[in-house]
Image 1 (cartoon, rainbow, N blue to C red):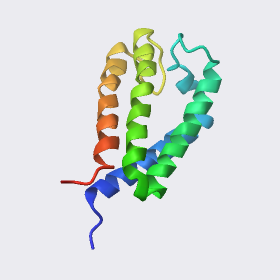
Image 2: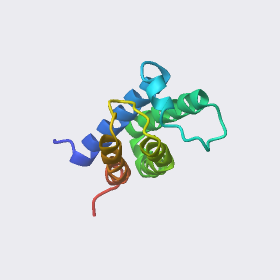
Image 3: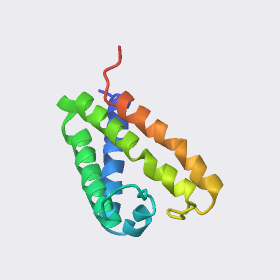
Image 4: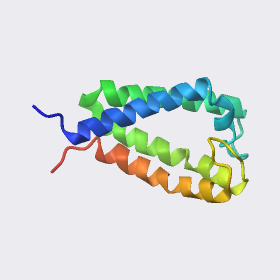
Length: 128
């Protein structure tokens, strides 16, 4: 029996979130700090650590809780929406991180966030 493509997409997104969350806590911590907007009233390192833990939890839930995939997919889509201002802030303030060292690269990255929202929703819904 073949594994449905949506299941593969959900597990891939979950795995990517666990990896990204782990990188928040370890080797990419400083890069993620470049994305925290100035208006956030919490220390940037605390925001990075908290968002890393959230990403690990969301990713693990996408993989391990298929019975709750619709709810987890909705929360993941909301999370991707909530962190979008950080990507905008990085672009507006010209902060280099993750190899995004030009305004063009930073602006191009903004286009990927709606893809993540759609991926989270599509991969956790049952086809009609």
